[in-house]
Image (tube, rainbow, N blue to C red):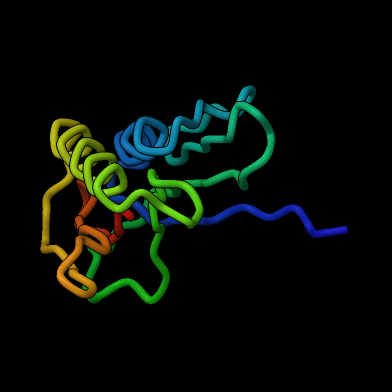
Length: 127
């Protein structure tokens, strides 16, 4: 049996960052977790890991060593045209929620993924 785990993240504004990631992933606030310097979100279906955000005084200073891939297209095999539409639609939603586009990665001339920054500048990909 796999071990339950939580992804822990540093944040300048943990509640804002938790709200962004809850929107991005379809997560909800963790019931019963109420801290002024922290926030936690969970998969409402109980499948994915929890994600915790803790306030830290120092700003982000380098590229992430670990990042989230938001996989909107599901698992292969893919209809490549539909996959690109799903990725681009999610990117538009996330820009509206405070993310910024960094760039696109192409594979054999097709969209592979879009690199983005969350509202605090943490890199992630939409694939």
